Image 1 (cartoon, chains in turn cyan, brown):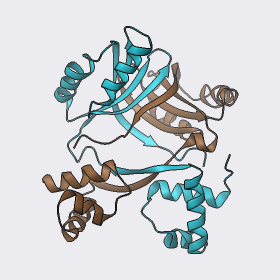
Image 2 (cartoon, rainbow over the protein chains, first blue to last red):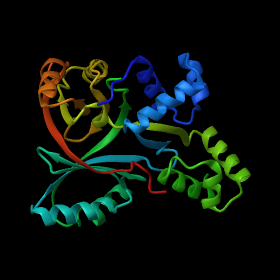
Image 3 (cartoon, rainbow over the protein chains, first blue to last red):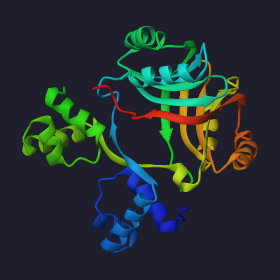
Image 4 (tube, rainbow over the protein chains, first blue to last red):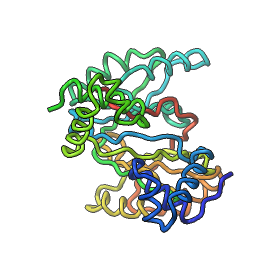
Length: 151
Length: 151
């Protein structure tokens, strides 16, 4: 397991905010040379700590005013039904994340829609018709914060 | 506000955030100059907030992720605010969401293992103010994590 020092942590926090910064600029903030910074980034990538990059878009400005979390319980279980459900749910473009969970529900989905009528359309035509879908619970997102976590 | 070329740029970039502006322009079928101007404009409008690194907590030794769904005691006028302020102080909390529906708040928390989770849950979570009820969904697998928008 990779161990991080304080500089690695600062580097990660900075890259989560903006992954477009060059090693030179990052190094200046942290008091490191460009090659030393580059080596540290490379080490974090090789260890899989940085698993990728993500575009941060303003959903609302792009016309997606509604985000809903759905808890879905499967009506029937078994290996085949899980696979069918997962394949079908993953293919829905409005479904941003799918997590298989243990607890009151079997799956947790994050769904975006333009507005509530659009969400209703997605729910009725795409979610309720998923193979094996049983009880569904919806919670509408009002606000959200992503934190740095234990870095 | 956005035309087809803008949407194409965002679509390709969202699918592959590591693409350079030159590669993006080529895929979207426009010149590099036009792509650069369009991207700058979308940044000015706040549509495009940037590209951020995504951390793999498992690679850092956090094997457990739990979604905690919290119902608050709403007879306390400032329940949401005080709960949020305290929840932000727990380092293992990586997401806080305010919801409208059956539950009021949701926290994503990460832990090294179940013993560590139990320790955080008892000493840091159950001590948060104004909790009326709390329910856990333990993540088994992340099936889809694109978090893109259906542009």
